[in-house]
Image 1: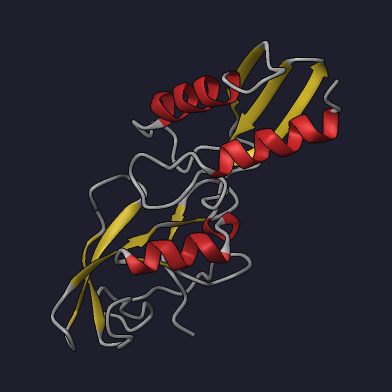
Image 2: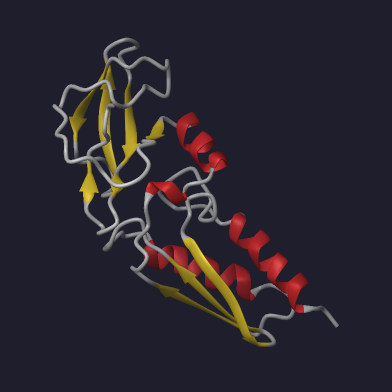
Length: 179
C-alpha cells in the first residue's frame, strides 16, 4: 500500500513537469499551483490560480493536469478548480521559473510589496534587458503576445523582449517602480 505522503509527492513531481503552454516554465515554477488535497484515497483536488482572467490557456492547463495526475498509480480521479482569490502575482514565480523566462527573453519585474502610485514614462530604465543586462530599455507596446506580457526594446543591443505584467493585490496591472 502506498501512503498519502508518497502519493502527494508524486503529484507534486508530476505538476512540476507540466509546462505552461504559452511560457517556457512549469506551472509550479510559474506559481499557478495553490493547493493539492486528497479527501479520499485516490481522489485529488488541485486548486490553480490563473495569471490573468480569461487566459486562453486555462482549459489546456486544466486538461494537462487532469490527464497527467490521473495517470498516476493510486489516483482514481483528479479535479481541477481555478480560483481568483488570492490573485496570482509575479511574486509567485520561483527563481528557477525566473531564470527560465529570462533565458527565453521574458523578464519578471522585482518590485515587491504594493505597487507605487508614481507614474513611469513609456521610455524607462526600470526593466533591464534579459539579453545584455542594459537598463537602456523602453516599452514598445503594453500589448504582448498574451494578456500577461508586454513588449520592450533595448537600445543597447537592439533586441526586443517580453516582460511579465505585474498585478497588484486587486488583480490590476501596474507599472514597475524604477526606484
